[in-house]
Image (cartoon, rainbow, N blue to C red; front, side, top):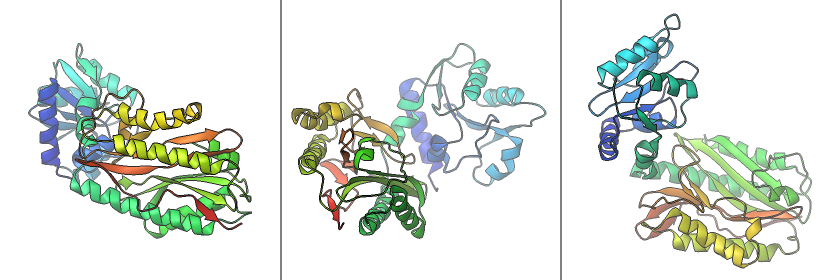
Length: 366
């Protein structure tokens, strides 16, 4: 993934200055991908990108050094298995002037042993996670990120349409998932998840797709996603085999109204919890509040789930350029579940929906 590392490090240092942060420590993973466009192989060997106000450097296992040098010109302090990382870490901190700092920010996905190794090397430093630094920067996407998310959304739309056209009584949830995965692969996308939940299975929001056979009258939740060029997709739509089950239409309408309420509420300057509240109010007012059992949405970028989270308690102020899902649902145990999901880019005048598929129920012939 090609990124402007110089620009992103400059933006990070501006955030560090604003937040009084003396050191940011990033482990191999999505934060490093965002900053540098790559990350070394993640394993049990401590590997850290250390960013101070003036300089940055790597604590780098010797095993990863040669391959990583092809992707970055940042200096390395290497260590071998025979020696351990302690001396190399201390030398790295000396190099960037971070042996004695007041506040260090840790990558929240970092292994605990990496974090303790670093904190032991800078005793007395206050520590927090990346919400106000790298995390805050990642929430606002740029044009290149928008383009990749839109490309992936279009692939997911086509995979969903392929699923709709393949539904037949007697096929299993796994059979339908295989259609989705095969389509993703046909477009060069790597499948990430494939939730297919028929009838009562759809009442489990994270149902593990099973060998249950689809039957006439089944409402089917289809929640799918894949990755290309370092970015994901995520979409949920509903299908039914033949005639919908009793009461389905009413519930679908309620969930659709909840989606519309959340879309209307999502504007720059609004708290994330207000978007959740808008969707939740529609469902609660209809008498199904207890059956909406999860948050309204999650951010999406390099990671399929990342800030901002659209929850009942989130104080995050939504900004132009943020990307997140809106996906309320109602789950009736033993009967069916309904979830309708859109990924949106928040613009100055409201959300831009990435999918071109309507949220209407798809009716497959029994």
